[in-house]
Image (cartoon, rainbow, N blue to C red):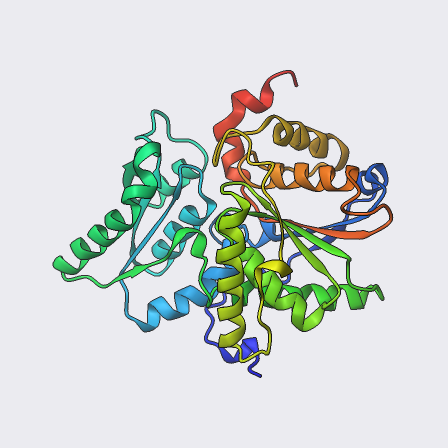
Length: 333
């Protein structure tokens, strides 16, 4: 078995991130609730993508890339992180984003402008039909200009990037043992492309075999994630030469909290954002973490997460996007 530290990694994130107990909110729900503050990873505005990019950028630098190309929605935290990493390493970034050319530049879009990313926008209805071709065209254009492109898929979801969140489980294992506490019963996380849950699935099998990971989809149907997460996680375990095969039946995924669609606030998510702000002074975002925490609440209320259990909620970041939805969040507040 290989160790994660044997892989080349460009250290950028501020690690370890805090692990905080949400006492008041946990008492309201009837569970022991912890929050892993990966919104505090720091680099490029923070968020879960920093852990992944440490491994992906090692590969990009080895390939001598000078253009990073990726995709996401208007308020994609991943796209913002790619733009930030590119600027840090004196590279260009090309962001092929789902949605029309924006009328206003706010949230992550504004930060991407400050980082001088190059943009291409694809209408919502055309996105899934043309995105692969548009990414390839951007790479071909870079090559024609004598540059070396490095393509990072949606959300940075690759077998290599799973090492970031497998390593996060080891980090949390140390934090729990320092508190003389048993591992949690559940980890709950937002899933937009599947890479974060894939890494967590690899990690729990190594350090916390009795812990279940629950992914709350903010973008796609359950069937899509069952396939991609099981595949990416299994390939990540193979990279480490760890004897774990993650099948679809091993996964817990909820897809009832997407709301109107990816990148669009849901009624339950907005209510949850306001609730956490008032109760714990924790800020969630409308695209990812607000929907995921709404899912956690519902799972407890339905008894899928039983009363008295211990739960870690992974805060994947996303606060910049809060400001892009100011009117929605300020309504009736």
